[in-house]
Length: 150
Image (cartoon, rainbow, N blue to C red; front, side, top):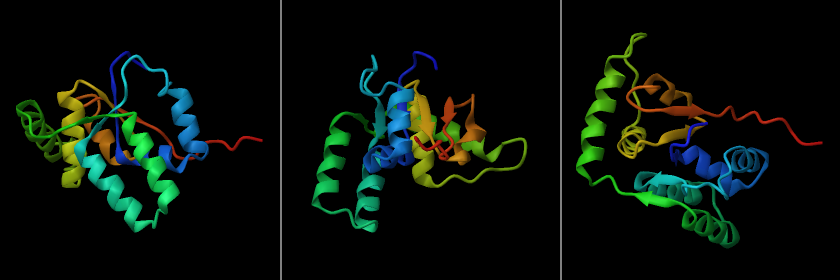
């Protein structure tokens, strides 16, 4: 892994909040608690993760844990010229993928644009982002099937 900062996709934040094998594996493998750069997230991820908390019926304990996880991350706004420029570039890249156009959700476009603007590696469990690697956005995909600990 490079020394570039990491921008966590919503799927990664969800794994951290669930605090099971995958989240623990990610925390350990990427040294999230001891990283030189605190992990980044897009403000879009904040909205998505709270919507998921509602959808999945998170109780008070899980919601408090979610707040604690979010407090350890640096939240980046999308209302910045560099993110807006990157959004156009990421959208164009999706439309011109050699194996056929790739349609990302608007939220995923914003998350990838935020990663590009921050010169961060997008950490995700979502294969849809792979068409963006290495340009316009560095992506590190994590397979969700983490070996179980004995």
